[in-house]
Image (cartoon, rainbow over all chains, first blue to last red; front, side):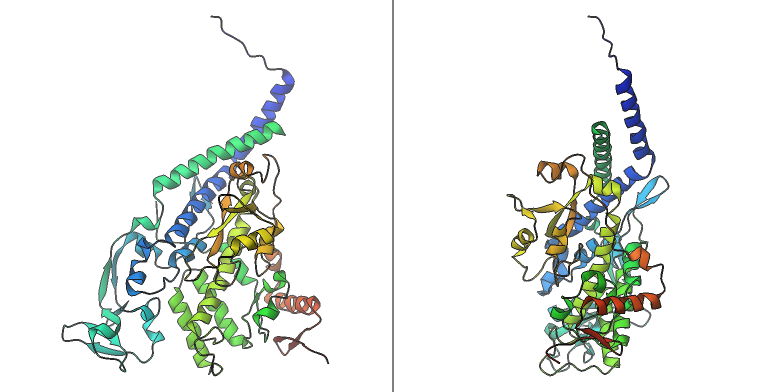
Length: 203
Length: 267
């Protein structure tokens, strides 16, 4: 079977070249990177929006019967615009405590001090200083706690347990996986280029 | 690669920087009558006339927006400031939204101010041409848990000019009046109501086309809230411009000292 030749008339060829030049401009600039960055940002925000409403990431609050503090909803709000840096894109999340949850690790009290672990719903999401009347107590078991002196001095009436340090396990599920982010960025870049190509052709 | 070193949210920070302190005796219903673009340039809280406390709110919100403090610490700083000013709630309001030192009120002040800043920051960033081109629409959806979530959002979305699709999703083109109509505050970005758990997410052109909202080539025009222009002026000039804009916006508004008040009833 013979081959075939596609002949492109000059006018169409010129149009195509213009389209290609414009498309190269889109790709050569930061626009594709911006779209890729925003696609990642949206994926991260969607992830926070989902886990903000689940139970799995609110075990501490729910086990105390407390209202969650809106940590992940706030992280969603604070997921920043992508920053174009050299060949890459970075996205920052200005949410105190998020890195601790993601990486895990030890948290130490200041020298001579204690960390406060909420022990009841009223204490959850608050500082011990929110309750000026609390009193330090040491139970026979050796545990330290803050209690309301007007209540029974019993381990069931504790506002906060006091500890010198805690270890928090890492929880990578607070963020989408790297693979998820890479995939969504790549797909969005391809879709964006296709969109611009089609728009250029239609113009 | 993930690092534990975030950088400040520049656009959100800018939206905080252009705001003037605005002590006011007005309640939330009266404040709702003032043009959103004017109030967007003020740090205020319903019926807070103490400029020193408003400055503390502003400082604490800045720290909260920048992730330097968590909500519990931010709230405590507000309470401590109120205590140092000798604040005592009106009898019968203790622990309620009318009590400026209550958890409910301090949470509301901090969260709303922070959400306005980040809402604006995200909105402004997404006004860039490639983003408007690729994501010309957005969805209105629940992004946070609430003990008693509002259930009338679909009706409000429709009343604002939007379409609730058969699959229940609320999607509309960006930069249309739907979003300011939907907002209790007349702003195109979240939060859309007090203590609301609703937010927005971008929707790609391909999906917007499938839903008949837009064609392939129609471009959404970028918008601007003018904060960049405001930043060219000193804080004093911005304060003065805010006062002038408020006085021109409504004949009933006046300043007694530095406090914005509203003349009511016959004179």
